[in-house]
Image 1 (cartoon, one colour):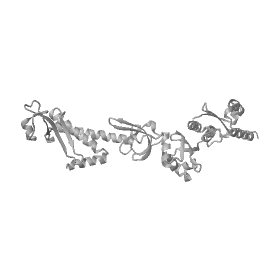
Image 2 (cartoon, rainbow, N blue to C red):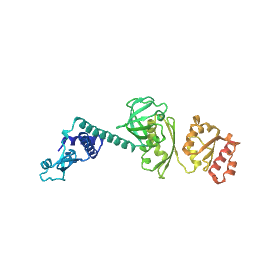
Image 3 (cartoon, one colour):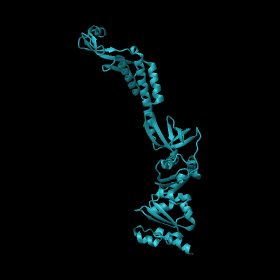
Image 4 (cartoon, rainbow, N blue to C red):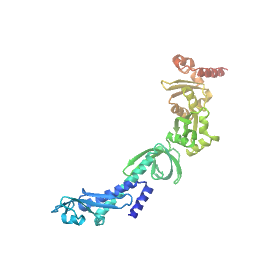
Length: 379
């Protein structure tokens, strides 16, 4: 038994996760390469390796002839009978090749073939491992800044956090542990190239999936998410179990669950709202914490007109329009917000005008809400 070779293969399989069969094939190919370099051809060379003992045999198939014209392919009857006593003209004889006879160049080439195969397999294993994690969140260790990009150690490979995928204002120190979203894994000649992100909305979604048991088991479902990285995220959730409060499950006791995610995102605010199949109710929820007087939604055009109390207009729009912008992304509707004073004379905002144009979207709830707000305003 070739114990040294067996131990080497075991170590490679354990540390590099390269299968023994692949390594055996690499050794066979390296011996064939060495024979070709040594003899000039290897068409009739065979290599056999015992998978259990790691003993290998390298031999050439030669035809027994009276007069040898090609040493590589033919053998004389006299020499053949030394190997096999009953050999005769026309037989094929297996002539063992001693690998120790190979020259230095042939041996070096054989070694290079094995090393090249190990490198290729190692890259392939790492690529497959991280390709499976594409579109998922992993924990990495900050290594160094490469220009404006950041190199992140993900374990067996390094990820690149490009400047465009960094949250404005976030500064990392070497050896700091952070969570990143794997955007894309590319296979290159130099090994896998892994692109990661800290700004992608899916990062927040995956963090909630990992933190909230109800999301992981499907009881609570994340229906939509809109994010302005580093500032604010809005997320719409719904419960598939009437006994489970979707928003409460995501927030956790005393806000424990959502706060752990806020900490990971360096203080980014997260608004969690209830999903509603009714577009009007959904838009009303999405614009929270602002109070809404009425919502006129057009599902066909994907537009909505929203009326808010005068004192709530700035809150509904948000700082630099952020609240309205995130609500529009979350719901998929183009939202036009006006105060009650602005809406009185604005076309399409007066409730009676809206009903004349969109009778099919009649909603008593909006009518009652708008009437109540109008009465209180007149008083």
